Length: 324
Image (cartoon, rainbow, N blue to C red; front, side, top):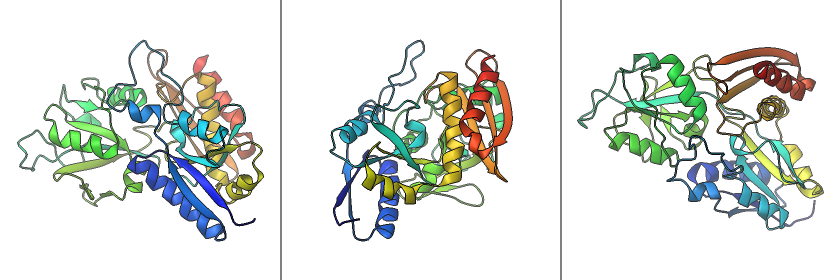
């Protein structure tokens, strides 16, 4: 490949930049003769951070955090785009494709809450808090319908209002607002921002307020959303130079797992705010996937295993079971 500049489209949030810088470093390591530059693009979702995106009874716009990046690709203002895979719609614009999926980070969610021993004067809780341990009427803020439904499954007495903003903003709101008791965030995002959860369960890192604790929620308690923990690379379909780059960025097992999950989501007819969850794992050339849906009332669960080459069929199978 000849020396030239490759433009990487990204959102400007701290997490988006952390992920894009990670991809940029991988590209530079494999293709040192090429120049890779980041181009920050503001998306509709970034502009709506203070608004609730989960208004009951209203359809959500697709591609909240991806559309403007995709326009840049189609206009040849960028060569490929880096997304959190969970934000990428299952149906992509004509001419674009999911070119690569990076190796997945930890898919688990984290319950974050104040320490009862802090001197803030606000209500706090003990170390290693479980969802069931929260008192009646406790407020766990999250804008994810998936998280809300699973929280209420484990503790029906909770209040689960929306909360907006990036990872650090949500953490700061929890620390500052006495009306909030806890929130739930993805462990992958916390880790990529270089925040740490100590062995005893303290949340630490630059900008993190003092006196916050964290409990990592196992997938048996909180099943993740489709694509959680994975980074997606989107490109033009016929771009051979980018195709060669993406071949080195793609993690096969992760790609197959998320292909199954995305096929499930498509089969359920939902987007990133649908009250569904799915998690696929590879074991000995087999894909095992667990899925659940709150779309039609009480939770419905399904699980199945198929050969790794039948990822899409696995997702479609579980969607059919849960819709039956």
